Image (cartoon, rainbow, N blue to C red; front, side):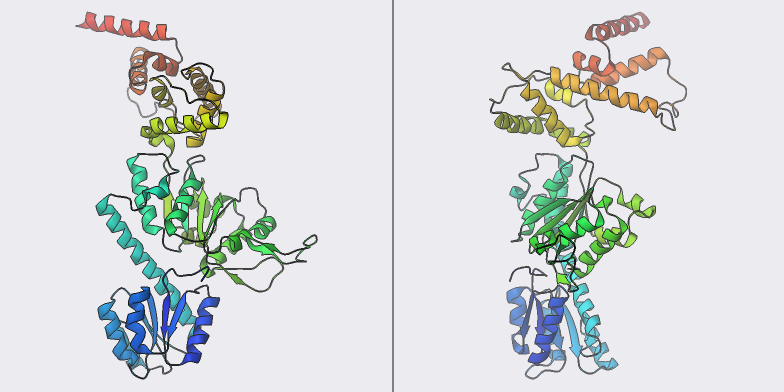
Length: 476
């Protein structure tokens, strides 16, 4: 079946075929369309084991094997399965007895169908969370990735990212939303694609950057429209939600949504339902939803710009990607990778580069992150002529960017000065020596790079070092 939710089927057990058919349709209308049924309770145990059913709904009064006899068998043999008992008779004694035997919940058939549907949904969500927790524990103790090939597009050997990969493997198989946060340029879509590959979903990965969309255009793009929904709608349109059936829908820049769009998105996440423009009939979706933002959603919801209920609904699974400046150990790998990519695109042989180049790159803090580094390398290689890649373009770029940002900082001074907490203030001589020491440390002892960071010539730095050395000898 296409577009199945949940991944493992819900099992309905009842000797009344009419109720099985009716309640199966009710669950499908509520977005839970992966359901199997049995009108013979004697087959229930076998079906649970064969299909790994996370939730079982069973009638209390059945021939051959009563629900109160079947229930303890399920609890004993499959303690992780949520067994929900239903009955046509609303008796407190029966409910108490079933709960004591280990039932997940108890409902009456006729008067509580909506409550029963909600109960099944909760049971499915709890089962998925248990599965995630088990996977997280396994990954934590093994320290190994089960599907390393899923992360092939992410170039890294950083330990922090490796831990994030383990978490992604644990949550990939569930249907709960994922929120990916991180600065612009860190590669949020690459991480979303990795989650999609790990999930094993048969549908497509459908991505959209919603920044700049107004509410109407976004609704049309996501949900589609019926013919005649508005002037110019001569044909019906299938939205991206429909295209992502049994796959993954990735919405980037979620923090830019207005309040009306946020309400529609909340319904899509919670009820798995949406309305195409011009339609009064709700459609269900089985798409896994992944969201990304570079903004602080918690701060936005505190100011009222982002709905609190939507914020908490998105927080089920969170992935925060660290900026490049916090994983500079990846610079060598990224440099090699982007040089190879750029050389292929530019139809040039991949050049060698000076051993000092990674050191130079490590002195920059990359506000544009990996995307900025890729652009720097592509630009340098496009101007490259000799056998060895020149460092001049990198030096010029870093110097220019640092100067521009320094001017902005001078125009907008911080509320608290750089030395506000330093008592007593160092002398100019001491401050100069501290700056030189720090620059040499960041440049790994390379005087040319350290001098560039300090905004002086290499000769001037060399002179200052000699002066400092002479003073030290005199003191000794």
